[in-house]
Image 1 (cartoon, rainbow, N blue to C red):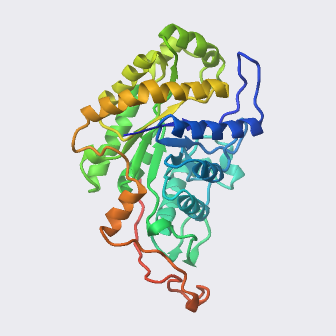
Image 2 (image 1 turned 45 degrees about the horizontal axis):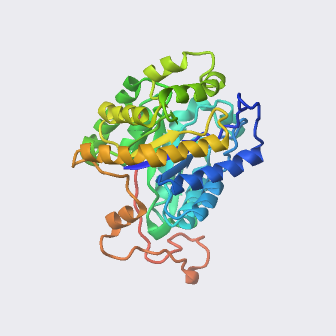
Length: 395
């Protein structure tokens, strides 16, 4: 099973020191955090995509490429990539480039986004969020699997004889997760394509996520991708760790009370009892996290949110030390011992996807066919072209 951290990339005032980091400081520190995640033995670093203050991660592929260059085994991914307001052509090309630069140590999580003003900034209408998500991913899915795409839809100009470049590494599309907070339509989309489903698992009671994950598993099986146990599930979670429970609550309370997403709501203790938030000793965080498997079944990726709400970078790095030394090793052993043999241990790696497509054969390496010149008359500009066509679900 994979363990890692996810960042929403917020720039928030530290209520203890009164310091608000600059964008430059926050960007520099998120790189330190990601690199340290690998150093302490974590597997994954994820960052969200935002285009409005007080967030900084407007260009996740740039950030993740830099982090991939500074690490050796860390999987870099998003939480999330906006499939609604981004052009699928740009997504196809940017994430294929990230795939090459990281040597396949990447995947991505697609989501609709729930910040209403972002839609008109990119020429879209939030009322069309669901059909945008369906149409745009159908096009992205094809762009990674077909050398030449002819396409016409509702929300962008048609494509005729279009080839996105670079082609995916080893001619294998990156693994895709579909992330959701509230609604089942994204779970349906994930299931239709046989992709992974990531439940936010932060702000809502477990019963809410149980319904979404159960629905995804059922539909995954319905579409013939495997049994419900074989579906690929990821979960978020929030944790703050200290030597003992009292220290953890004392240290985190000012951040909880002042955080925009928590403040003026339930108490921290009530929030802990109602949601996946875990504040306490390493053992208490272990015990709370193990309840996720009881609630949702076997899953393949656990991402903790640890760098939000104005926490200073040194405190975040210490949280990673505690996760890496005291929490994650125990969770790995415990969850592996409880895993149903039918359930995958991890989400598919790039090597897994290459093997699934090519078996023991060498993967196709697309090479532009210089003899054809530009691709203005149709046909593939690559040697040994292969295509695959898929329609998108109607919800």
